[in-house]
Length: 389
Ligand SMILES: Cc1ncc(COP(=O)(O)O)c(C=O)c1O
Image: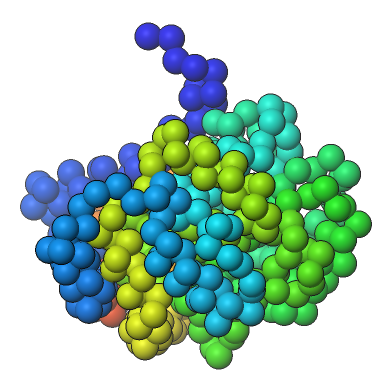
């Protein structure tokens, strides 16, 4: 069948291929340790589940407004005000089935054929694929360990021009775990002010997973003019261990954009699941202690994995300040990231994610959203494998 040009532009997923192979090996009885998860290993806190169960029992089984219930959108506005000092009204909030969905719909509403989207690299692998499907053009702004995988004003200036349409910022970052400080964001704001047409898409999905006493800042909170052209993306998946619930949102700076994003949703997926939204309200109102507790566990695991991987030969981990990934420079091993990931799976029985689809073939990504016992055993296997090389 002849597929659309847009779909042909999407790259096949190497990550999924490796994950499928790991599952196949596990099913055949092999003991595989997976450090590939992009989701919390914790369960959703019970009172959040209870809220969804009660919603179902009282007949909350019908369509809701396509952009989410008013109750949930109000709770999101309260959260954004409380945590980031951002002011939004419920009409500006579009709740979708996950942050991924929200990002896609915002890009859909903004991009014309050939529009340029600035993406700091390494990046979350779905950004360029979404841009490609929508006919846009990704312009990668390369960062390395030298700038702690963060965009600097100088790097930003190399790719930005008056016709650039969107800049995607992701702090804390997947895959590097880099977190921008307030001062670093202010530095970027100075450059962004010279390009008034540019829209900023600030993906803050890992906001609650932040270590070393760091504080998360939304770029929208730093300057009123920047706030008027920043779309804030967030969701429930990572903070409250709710990946399967599929709840995420876009907070749009103006009602026109919100109407456009909402319009796409009305004619495609309609509302996120009714009773999931009821749980989503409670997560935002009562979930802070649990989110903080899970964050402390990730920090402990980060410390363990970082120190142990750092001690291995030819592996140079970047110390993440947020999210739950360790981005490890493996260039000295001399094998590209896809081949290396395949070999670690086949020969060491450790599943990792290659850096290539995230924009760096010199790295692999290890997730520490798994138990300390698993992390320790994975390191032992990696050490044994490296010893044999
Ligand atoms: C950077 C980033 N943004 C957005 C998402 C999407 O999250 P969800 O669709 O589960 O809300 C993810 C998920 O892995 C992510 O890593």
